[in-house]
Amino acid sequence: MPVPDNHIVAMPPPFEEPPYPADVFAGQTVLVSGGGTGMGLAMARAFAQGGAQVAVMGRSLEKAQEGAGKIATLGVRVHAMSCDVRLPDQVAAAFDEAEAVLGPVTLLANNAGANFPVLAEDISVNAWNAVTRIAIDGTFLCSTEFARRLIARGQGGAIVNNSAQYIWTGFPGDAHSAAAKTAQATMTRKMAREWAPYGIRVNAIAAGFFPHETSTAGRREGGTEVLQNMIPAGRTGSIHEFGWLSAMTCTPFFVALTGQVILQDGGESLRRSLMMPDYVPPRERAEGPWGWR
Image 1: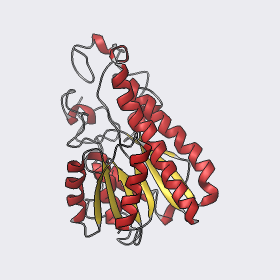
Image 2: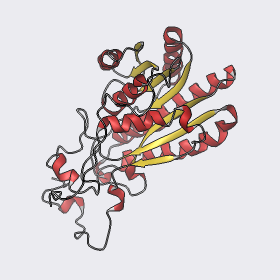
Image 3: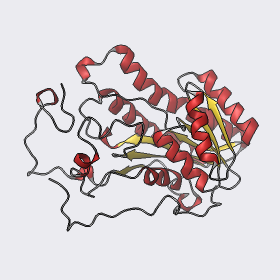
């Protein structure tokens, strides 16, 4: 049913009012994988709002450059690069390029990923590899390259990973992505333990529904109105909320925060109860959220 009019639906401040000072990342450089569009762009813009220089890394140089143009309007130095995060040589070269242009990278946002809805029994080997290798291998290769450089310099830093709320429950059509995002969460905890003595913090955001121009959420299900009716908070997330929380984990305000997977889903994961509708397997759903045809 639609969200009743008497329900209070809390909204975030506008993008122009970030929750931290404009110089909180001054003098630092952040590298954002998949930073040219969607949630990666939201991360990049949030870091830029705190004064960070931004290296935008994407498989498509054109998309990275488009995103960099949007970030540059916030008044920070930006550099766009092309990189396939599954290839260690390209990852190392991208870090070299970013540091040659912007200086030492001290912040890393792992966002690069791919996803498309398909039931598990229909996932081809190529499709499985396309999704899992970008998220798992990409996060591992970027994080270890970043850490090696900081450890060699005797310098601390912070990593934030873009995970997903369905790592605990799975999701129809997301066996590949759920596996990959779960691996990211495990890496977050493991790397945080190993790198804490070097002053390197690692956290992740398990994001719920944040519709944006390149997402599939809300499209085949009848739009965001259907989604918001399923979420206790009464709405899907605003993309800049995700960017802000991601950046906030890397600020000096949270220097004791590491190894955490923070759930940001408007309470969607809490809605299970005895009053839920009967379960209908995906292939048997005629229509509605995540029905299959």
